[in-house]
Length: 91
Image (cartoon, rainbow, N blue to C red):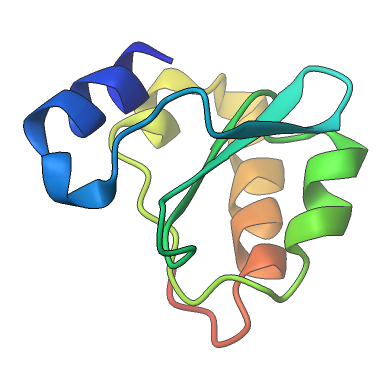
């Protein structure tokens, strides 16, 4: 959540109202820019509700630093989840 707040404060052109959120599922929220072109999901990447919403719907996933922060046994699962989200495999 801190990363989203910082991004919005540094980029006012995004229409940075952090209250523009909706609940996707248990423990997962989505913030959408005012023009609807940019979405941020906050929550558990491995959540079924998030994976269902995003399956093959992303053009690009930007995730800075998570791979090194994820436990080694979970890294393959993490990469599979990201690939499942991207329609053209731009991970």
